[in-house]
Amino acid sequence: MTQAPATDVSQQRATDFNPPAWLRGSHLQSVLPSLPPRRNWTRWQSRALRAAARPWLLDCGDGVRLQAWHTEGRAECGRTAVLLHGWEGNADSCYVLSLAQLLHAQGYALVRLNLRDHGRTQPLNRGLFHSCRLADVTGALRAIAARCGAQPLYLAGFSLGGNFLLRACAEPTLPESVAAVVAISPVLDPDHTLRALEQGWPLYHSYFVRRWSRSLRYKQHCWPDVYDFAELLRTRSLRVMTDVLVRERTAFADSAAYLDGYSITGARLQTLTVPARILSADDDPIIPAADLDRLAPTPLLRITRTAHGGHCGFMSGMLARAYSDEFAVRQFASLLGPVHT
Image (cartoon, rainbow, N blue to C red; front, side):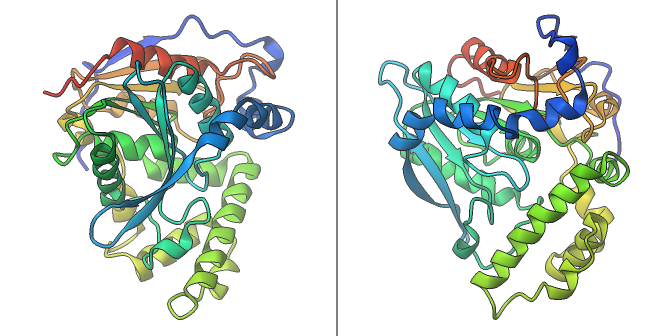
């Protein structure tokens, strides 16, 4: 993919996020949201929202079905937020629930979407998840828009979920009711992210190998006549697992073509049709911040960078509201109603 310069992409530095010195480490920022007591606090704070949620089974076209969880909002608000987790997360991931709880308090209806084969949804679809299945997400957005009628949809995604939603908002099939998208620590160049996972703190690589392996075992359990991952799972390598599955389970010639297939650097986002906002930390240990400068110019894209925050962290205290939650709510509030070009 040709890489275009990004000198015209609007970038700004956040001056209102200053975590205490003890909380500025990128690794602590990245793992804290999933650790107790933060995890327990988030689940307790979101207990009413989760209790009120009802399952939606979405027809995404071509026989694909995705699961989502819908929570009614206040009628006077008249807006729905669609939240999408990262790779090997799910609709109940702590960062999703944290933002969902704040948006719900503002009156938003909520749709927490699960990607294919995430959130124990492996039985729903025969085909295996991969990150280039953009039609899954665009189809889900059309199904959500049909259910929500005239209500404007505000999209927020984390990590790979942010990448999916940014790509979806650059597609001609985007529903007219989508008003804006916010991406928190989105994957920019997947090849660079894979290298960061391989060469960085070993905890991240082992975490994703463990979570991905568990997902593949369950997929095999649900479809025993289709999948046998026994040999693959012995590799314990993200690179090898990716190479094998791309070769055996996708139409891509190799893993390089596959990784490029969901990159958003270069010209990929030049066809955005709604305002897009990215929040990214310069110390993100998984998403190299230098890749932000490789996004193509587009007047609809705005990037906010912080010195600290890690990957999907942005914590200012053990039990304080995440800066990323407040950022998303502020962005949605400033972008009222559909603004298509």
